[in-house]
Image 1 (cartoon, rainbow, N blue to C red):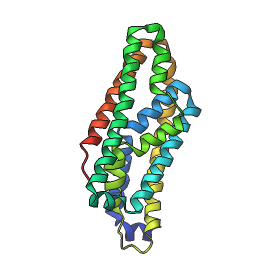
Image 2 (image 1 turned 90 degrees about the vertical axis):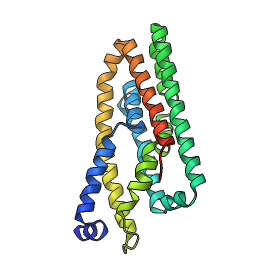
Image 3 (image 1 turned 30 degrees about the horizontal axis):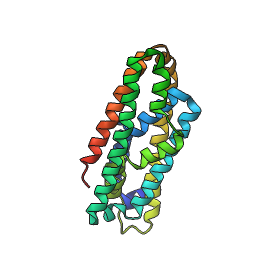
Image 4 (image 1 turned 120 degrees about the vertical axis):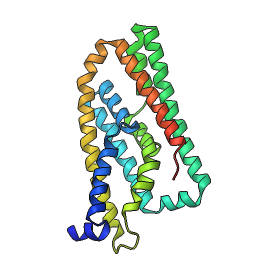
Length: 221
């Protein structure tokens, strides 16, 4: 294992990647905010359904990176623009749904919980989390650019090095999302008792999703 690390990254690059991975995973993003909202509204089990969608989406992005997606996007700027603008539109759409739930919640306190639940979680958490994972700023800024630069294409067994990086990413992601899920469940009761607070938080998250969409729309590769 040590020989693999040395040959593939060099010890400095390896630990730079590990630290970078941890901090990027910990940054608030569409994935973690979505899982937090699902866990708060529907409990631990549904929170993990969303997390599983994220794991699958991340795995798909890693495989695409290993298969040369970064090179494909660099040599096909029009494809890159399609990918990022479709993703930006999807994130903005989710944000607008949440802002609508926030407005309805403040307008009619009796409808707040039902409307906010529909705004945050209108469908299956696994499917929606999978799509969010494939269409978010980290997909463009991390898995397809930052991730790929730490693997030497001339390395004798590149799939092993990609596998090692993927394992590190998924361990960090699993640990972080587990914490997020249980925090969401703990906060759920307080949010249910304070409906306007719940609506306000939903509006804040919706605004962040719109911000993520804007960030993705301005991304460069």
